[in-house]
Amino acid sequence: MPKTSRTVQTAATVGLALFLAAPALSAQTGGTLAERNEDITNTRHNFSISSGRPGTAATLPGTFVDYGEICVYCHTPHGGNYDQGPLWNRNAPAASYTMYNDVTNTGQSDIDMSPFATTPNGVSAACLSCHEGTVGVDVVVNAPNTWDPASGTPGSGTNLSAMFTTSPDNLKVIGADLRNDHPISMVYDPTLDDQFKDLATVTNGNRLKLFGGGVGVGTVECATCHNPHTANATFLRIPNGSSALCLTCHTK
Ligand code: HEC
Ligand code: HEC
Ligand code: HEC
Ligand code: HEC
Image 1: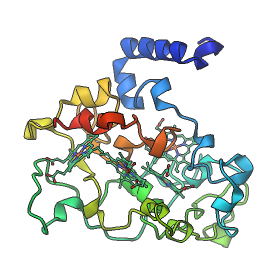
Image 2 (image 1 turned 180 degrees about the vertical axis):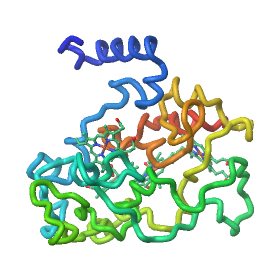
Image 3 (image 1 turned 120 degrees about the vertical axis):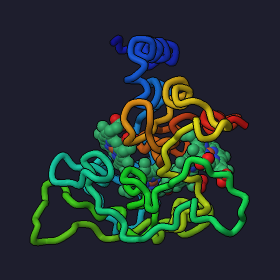
Image 4 (image 1 turned 90 degrees about the horizontal axis):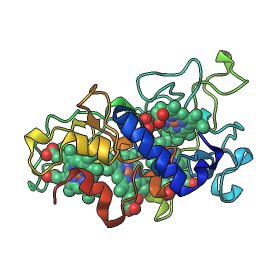
């Protein structure tokens, strides 16, 4: 692949070639390289000031532990948990959740893709291990170079609720009541509701990512709409200008 692939045109061409050659790969990885725009160093998910976190040091509390690495707050090469994210370096939040389908207050829902999970599936729990707001963002299972089981879980325990309290920052705390958030952890099945686009449209053409269901089926999770590594605004897999993200799935 030529080094010049940084130019938009070349990157798009390479992406198109990949897409034509291997559409299944494209579906799994969530879009072409150019669309994915993965550059985590320059995002708010880089929690290490010494690793080039963008913005000023003042955006993190002084007690927050800087491990000098970027991935480690979420992934570890050894000894992590595997039931949430891949090589996951965090523990699940203890909270019990109120899911979207628990809604009884409006009676306006038209939910056809039930049954929803009664608790978020693993990969959404992975996001919620920080965004639920109670588990320390710097609390990891396996800290780099210093692992000593006798010392217990490393990290200061500074959680998202404490780090980001003022509006609009406090919106980053999703909490355990998911009734006011887009539904998650249901199988995307447009045969149950004709107001939804077919699977190929969702996963190939528009490059969102469904989870855990094998080829052709899968569930909607936080990381269906978001890519935690992308430099796109609000970590969206595809930008939502003209509601392009919403209209990838919804026929409205
Ligand atoms: C803020 C948390 C977070 C950080 C930091 C993070 N990741 Fe991830 N990563 C996730 C989550 C959640 C998933 C699962 C969801 C998905 O597939 O997008 C994931 C999935 C992956 C995957 C498999 C799916 C894919 O997109 O290829 C790889 C590989 C990966 N991460 C590598 C890395 C590397 C390398 C770094 C550091 C440079 C990193 N991640 C930093 C949260 C993070
Ligand atoms: C290790 C903890 C951690 C994990 C895991 C994590 N996040 Fe975050 N996320 C944060 C923190 C802390 C911020 C706020 C950073 C800031 O404002 O500087 C944030 C910010 C965000 C934002 C707002 C970005 C913006 O531009 O304001 C979104 C969206 C987001 N995360 C989505 C996700 C999703 C989706 C996942 C799972 C795929 C995830 N996060 C996993 C800690 C985490
Ligand atoms: C159906 C798509 C979709 C799903 C599923 C989804 N989000 Fe989002 N999320 C978005 C969009 C679009 C935005 C940007 C909203 C805006 O700019 O106001 C966003 C914004 C956010 C923000 C920034 C604060 C805000 O409200 O603007 C956070 C944090 C976040 N999402 C976390 C999550 C987590 C955690 C999950 C899973 C529990 C999740 N998202 C599931 C589409 C989604
Ligand atoms: C990955 C596909 C996908 C994307 C992208 C998506 N949705 Fe959804 N949305 C769903 C599914 C699936 C449901 C549950 C529908 C069902 O069970 O019948 C849903 C439910 C909803 C509901 C609740 C409907 C009800 O009857 O209670 C609203 C409102 C909604 N979505 C709005 C949005 C908006 C706004 C966006 C863009 C920010 C968006 N969705 C993006 C798949 C998606």
